[in-house]
Image 1 (cartoon, rainbow, N blue to C red):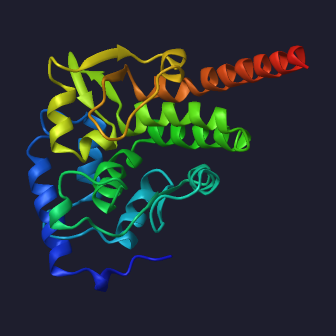
Image 2: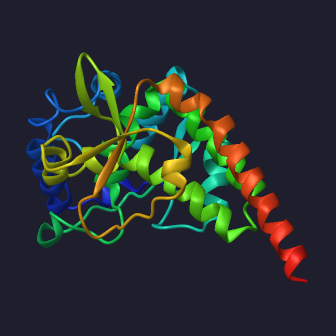
Image 3: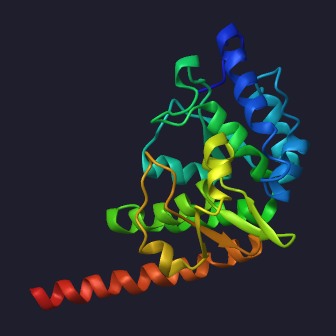
Length: 248
């Protein structure tokens, strides 16, 4: 699939501009340094929907990644295969004016505005690639994929980072939402240190603001945690097998 840029309508450009301008004012005080630096490198603007060909040239020159066009939500095996091959799946359609504040399925604003700037950070994309390789090794184990999805959810989508004596956002699910950007940094939000075991035991919901947010200290920490993730899955898988044998 390819992005059909000439098919975007006047409403599409209006939606992009409105969402961009509504969110960009929140980011200087809320977004992580890596995201803000990436946003500058990738050169997104309010008046122009990003052209994937241009975006891919920049990404490939910086980290070797690129966007792969997908129609919407895709199967886990395709999702993780793409990222293991340094391709981030992204839709090209934009929400309607009537859907500005909530969508059940992520659109291009979430996929591109939320995710792409972080794809310019090498430690972050190394984490994405390694997590995807782990997922592919467990792709036939629905239970393990669910646990890996929790890691992805609480980092790539809703992750926070400590920096400059405060807390900043790097998760795309927050960065593409004006409402959750404010909420996650407020006193109402619960912040928890990033620990693989804690996240593996924490379910999430898609239809509300998160009840808790996990904080990393660096993207290097995130990447190096993939060893812990693999050990956790190996240990729990072995316990499942041992339990099954006992029950037989």
